[in-house]
Length: 119
Image 1 (cartoon, rainbow, N blue to C red):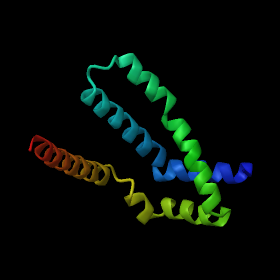
Image 2 (image 1 turned 180 degrees about the vertical axis):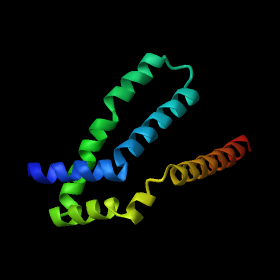
Image 3 (image 1 turned 135 degrees about the horizontal axis):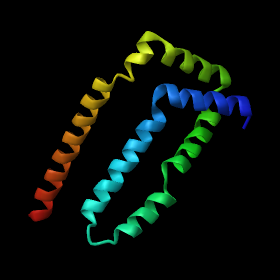
């Protein structure tokens, strides 16, 4: 991959908060796994977390972006995230609200699955 394009993708990730979102998602999921599989030694869960860490995941996402977007596409996305409208997507209140909604939906799904499993 072209170093300039890689640099632009990294800028895009920072501007869009994608890396932070991936990291939060991974950490939350690891916490859920630990709750679900509480009988598994926590060190084993940490080993798995390290094997499937967010940095490795991000490198794979960068490769996907490289294949699907031109440098011009990435520049347009960077410009968007630097605009007033793009900055609104990073609003902490928006992120918190959507995060709470997704957690609520996951709890509802989990509850329904438990009910089905009990039958």
